[in-house]
Amino acid sequence: MVDPEPLEELLGRCERHLILNEFSEAERLSREVLQRTMYNPGDAEDRAAVVLIQALYETKRFGSVKSELQALFGRLTSTPAASLLLYLSLALDFADRRLEAQQVTLDLLATRSPAGSSPWSRRQYAALLHLYVFEVLLPELHEPAQAARWLRESALPIPAALRASLAADGALLLLLGYAVLLRRRQVAAGAQGALRALGDVLRMGLQLSPGSIPR
Image (cartoon, rainbow, N blue to C red; front, side, top):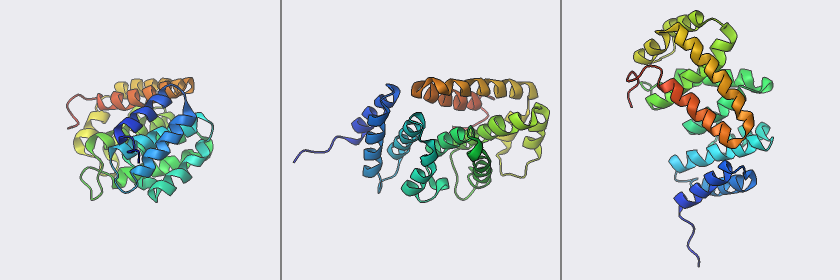
């Protein structure tokens, strides 16, 4: 009997196929990883789900992603953080999914605060907040001052340091908003560009106020 391939090696192959735009094989391997991690959730499960989402997106099947995530994790909001952030960032680009994605993002901001009972890490929560500010508030309000006011006055359980760091500089907020919109356009370049764009967006948000968000 042949021993199964070590999970980390399988996951590495899965991610390499995605980077090489070999979406069918990336999808197949991501499903294999998810099957093997079904009863042992963790980082590997989250990484595999990211690959699956991206592979479906790149093959024009993003419409099936929500049902796939619900089948895997029971509820959309039970999806691991990195996978859910990727799903929401892509869903906001689709007119028929944008309103739902906005509401899910707000619900997560209300329930996944690091100080809450079902917390995300501070970095994950910061990425979620930046996604909402840059992808929802700035495009709709057009005025960084209004976005800053929302950050100051929102009743959401946003950590004080994170709230202050984002609201402190309206001009910087606007510049970052434009930068995010520009990076979104690079998603059309393919999987490698999409993953790089997502990583850059999250890193850009986390670097907004160095040292203000604890690791």
